[in-house]
Length: 363
Image (cartoon, rainbow, N blue to C red; front, side, top):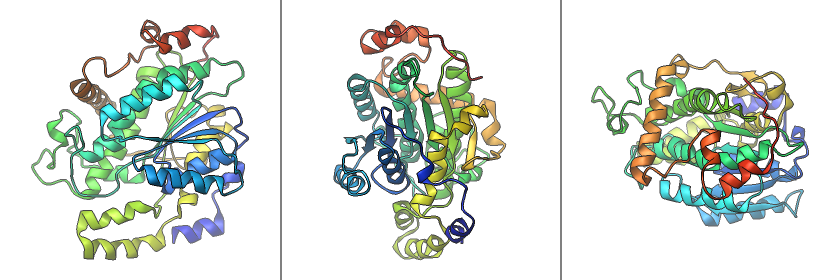
């Protein structure tokens, strides 16, 4: 059992190794439950200001109560309701954060639909793709000026963007090209229905491709940004996502499957460690692990061949931009380039011009 193995041998890192984060601000999507909750709790207990983003307001507020009921009753945690499957909601929440917050040091993209049946989002796009990837794509885009501003604050540690992927990215069908919206339908390109695992795996592949060939190669390196972007695998973790088996496979078989697999899984606290390590450990920057994928604290993962396909990364980027602009209009995305953002009206321009510090390349 994975949880037993972790208990006996450990991973060499636990939440007590998270450094003092006083003065820093972190954002965690899906922070109301499971891995996201454990990440948010650990960051809050390490004195970071934490923005907890989730769709369920009641669970979000309950999560804050739980966090404050532990070692830090004065934890600075704020809940913000967001529907990552609704691009309009994502844009509104991101722009509100950009206006109200003075800095954003850590962005943890954890929220997602688990192994579940096909459905569509509020924007009429595959729900898995919308929530797990596209909503985070837009969220990061709209908050990038604030993250860039944070990187220029004297003495500020390098901001980080950590996306929670999965070893299940290896199960993504080889037919995936990310070439069109039609491909995101219920059937793959060979007209065979996409399985619940394949739908999930496709999005976890997308998160790795977006980080490596999008954020790093297209944005961070060309703009000489002092920002780190990485992906993590939490391990097989028993969270509320296993309840989605019932939707994917029916009540009877889904329940049976849940009871079979859960004993072999890590608990959410154990599952949060790779992400907490990637978000806070000095090793990441010291070793130049920009754009890397980690399967455990300090352990580089070997991505699948598809996750190392630059052409797939290009297709994904272009498809993601197209989908956002088609739903929100040409102004739905901010320019990714630093110089272009500086020309944008509003707080983005003010932030980009407020501090004149030399940039440091992480390439």
